[in-house]
Amino acid sequence: MSVIVAIAAIALFCAGAMALAWWIAITSGRSGWADTFWSFTVGIAGVAAALWPLGELTARNWLLAGIVAFWSLRLGLHIARRTLRGGDDPRYAELKRGWGDQYRPQLLLFLEIQAAVALVLAVAVMAAASNPAPLGLADGLGVLIAIVAIAGETVADGQLSRFARNPANRGKVCDTGLWGWSRHPNYFFEALYWLALFPIGIGIGHGWGWLALLAPLMMFVLLRYVSGVPPLEQHMLRSRGDAFAAYQQRVPPFFPRPPR
Image 1 (cartoon, rainbow, N blue to C red):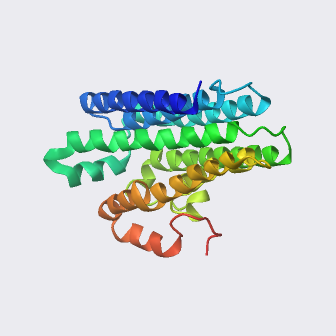
Image 2 (image 1 turned 90 degrees about the horizontal axis):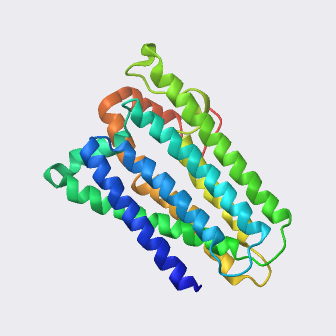
């Protein structure tokens, strides 16, 4: 089947899945379900993109399907557990405060933009999967990047969860572990994960593989400058005040560095 048909089918799936995510988030009152749905939507779209029958399936197709599925299950289940416990992403509280009476339509638009992001990620996976070269050292590098990123994000999420569950930390800012190296280590490792597509997708004479760079570049811009760091830090400044302002002075916002 043609690339255009494949991309169109994945686009329709992503748009429909995020419309359902919007309905569930509105009716349940828990915006965390939107992020849960997005994680699984990207996973399903990415696996479909990796295995779409544009040609003969190779070991690279299955490799990409596997690492995308593992990433999706880990992140989706983590957010689902947090949402079931009653926790929510403070970014949505900040967006709701800013949107006011227009919260519902604005949230739908926001989630459909996330559907478009999911589509771009799926296209990047498809580009990487279409590399006709046999598996080699570059693929090993990509897998290593993915493992480091998933492990780092898992550790960061665990450290933050343990910090938040301790009653003694109520009202404080988590600055231990990886959170002493970066104010948003989970976002850093999220962007790093998508960089894994690039070495896997690049091959001699495989011009389409450069599209794999779209994924890490887009995720970096979105997480660092649009929907990740800015709204979350606005919320933290309002809720933690001077403590978070001091944390901003000590710790870099995205790329980790050793604590001073």
